[in-house]
Image 1: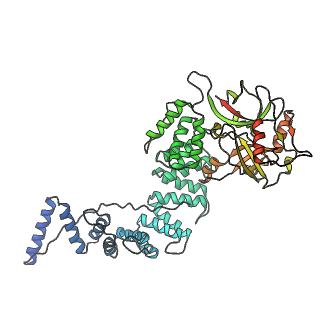
Image 2: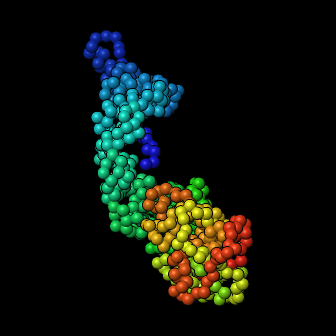
Image 3: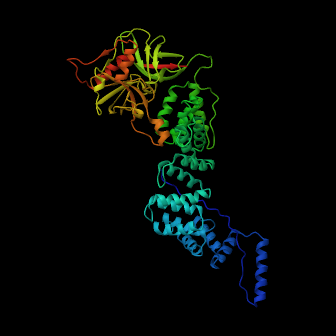
Length: 537
């Protein structure tokens, strides 16, 4: 669970009492004179100096409210020299009289070591006094101390008790934290539905983090029926408040399934998140940028630069799927590799799905989609023109071992990284894929957008799989964490079965003179039979 940040927002609405005055004479005269003086103060506005003097007199006279207000002035330096130690003294005078706000503030000062030596145990002591009187922020902070084991033994269940007390009073922070604890099962039995319930309460009060977590729950269907539209709605609310993770996810949602696609908005939101250091947004921003026209890029940059906190971006462009004259424009890119002397090439189903035209960079004409398999994410193309070099498939794909070295060669980011293709090494980290899919392997080679359809090769340069997916955005939506190098490829057995079913005459490697090659040699060979595929819509 993320670190819990303590917010010290305390209402400053305390009424000043009247000012008495000591005078010579009998009791009746003194009382009358005091009343007269009080009426005079009531009739005229006090200067700041007079107000401070009056407050000091009341504090010296033992008024807990005055002591509390004086301490706040001294702590903030408003109209008086700032002095945290002196403020702590006045908070203590009010606290020992049972002033709940002073007890809370004294707890905060001990927790932070401000004006007093840092002492978690004393912070707990004062939080407990204020919490017992129903102070919501003290209850929240006390839960925080229990959760982290500061000033007392760590106790997640006790933390939940105090968070619930604060949440019941409408504390949005406590409601959000309870959502996290029910989602993770810390201090309570894991309960996604209850997590959603608390996220909803905090989100309704405008909590950006709660809105983002609620978005993730709707996206994954945990604790609530899966609803992409609601996921986008809550993600948009959090993104409008400037939450980088939400902005990054919103960019990904806008080009995903189940929502109206708009590359300009996706690019703009990714720009905003990338500016805050979000790595996924930075990668996606570059991918989106490569798929936009110059005019669309300019609009996306304008939207991002003019954005203010609270704004929901609106694009005057359509979804970027067609040019203004109705002709298709380049929408996205991927990689394919030649598998037969007849010009057959293999790529992913999702690379060519929905394309009006499929083109190959550097070649005239249109590539024909012969067939595709949405389940295994494979597609067979007929390339325009003649082919000279073709890939060799691994002769025994079923004998791959976990930990074997592999190499991926492709054209990520629309050749933004290199027009000559990119080689990335890695290993086979698992012999099954997402949700134990036995038609996939998991690889560690870094994968960027545009790498889909790239060949995965062994150290002899033989194809053992086809890059299919990276886990980045799915995992971050479900867990809030950015996975490192968790990527998937369709395995060799599935690839060969697909080609066999479509009567493609492919070549296998191996033989008596088969040997391992250097990465440089593998890249040089792969470049001859690997192509950049463009999807035009």
